[in-house]
Amino acid sequence: MDQVEKRVAFSYEGLQSHLMQVYFVMNLQVNDVLEIGTRFSLVSSVIGSHCNLTTLDFKKEFYPDLIIDISDLKQFDTLKDADYDLILLCEVLEHIPYEKMDGIFKLLKNKTRKYVIISVPDQSSYINITFFGYGIGNKISKVLKKLFNLFSAKIGNLISKLDYKFRKSKRKFIMRKFEVDWHTHQW
View 1: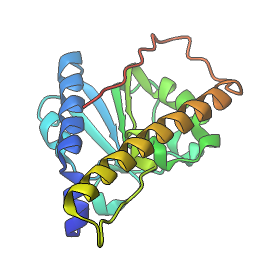
View 2: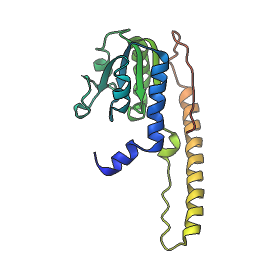
View 3: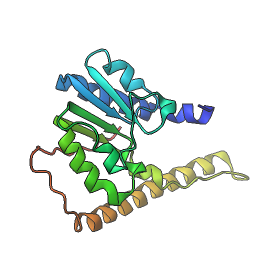
View 4: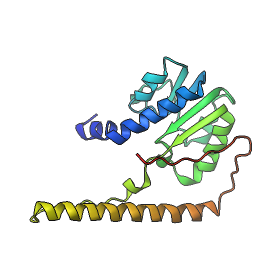
């Protein structure tokens, strides 16, 4: 892991996300947990001593218990149905092609007995304008950078909302068995 990757992985926002995952898992008091996408193993190392934890990733370099690519639906379907009280799927879905989402959600529904926790990164971070203040005074540079960052977050939110509305109109999958609760978190 290089220095940039370490900074991103253990940023303040990243740490808060990991702590929220631990908080939700611990409060649900579940026994059998499947964590999909183990990358840095911070969450695994905390919750692993409180439940029967199975880790799953498609990269063997992260040392998961199961090496499965969930975007390969046939491979993902090899897991036993209703084998886990909770499936934790955090910061994974953004790496999967949209056309495979319905299949993944159906399989998640079949593989869990109770809960699925899904987390995706803040969409505004995908549209970001980097501003370098070369040759501009420090105060002006800071003001312009704040304006650009505000602009990029607003554009990111707008694009995300439009994208959701267009995709929502074409959605076929409806989760009937489970109560669906939607939360957004502002760190």
